[in-house]
Amino acid sequence: QVQLVESGGGLVQAGGSLRLSCTASGIISVIDAMGWYRQAPGKQRELVTTITLSGSTNYADSVKDRFTITRDNAKNMVYLEMNSLKPEDTAVYYCHAANQFNGMDYWGKGTLVTVSS
Image 1 (cartoon, rainbow, N blue to C red):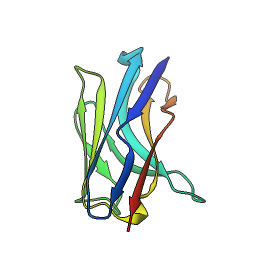
Image 2 (cartoon, helix red, strand yellow):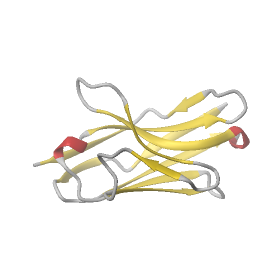
Image 3 (tube, rainbow, N blue to C red):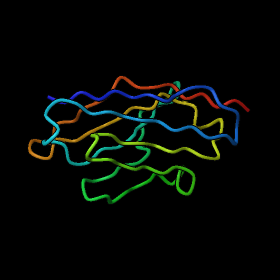
């Protein structure tokens, strides 16, 4: 079993920056890709970005060149640096991890990011 805990959300003005952190605990060895998803009010959860064990990254078009995902495998942590934030980035951000052996998904409880205009 894997547990994920996010931190770093909050209120920021448009154009500002925030850094989210996600700490993984439990049977860490089963984790392959980690990433961030978000869910805005009234919308479906969507992929923001992912990073593999080897460091390959993938970004949604809406956040490319503004958001950066990094991973510290020694600390079992993944980070999301968010710059040039826009009101449309307002959402609950969820940390995600994938089990490389059985495909199971693990989710954190989410952290709220609110961007004011």
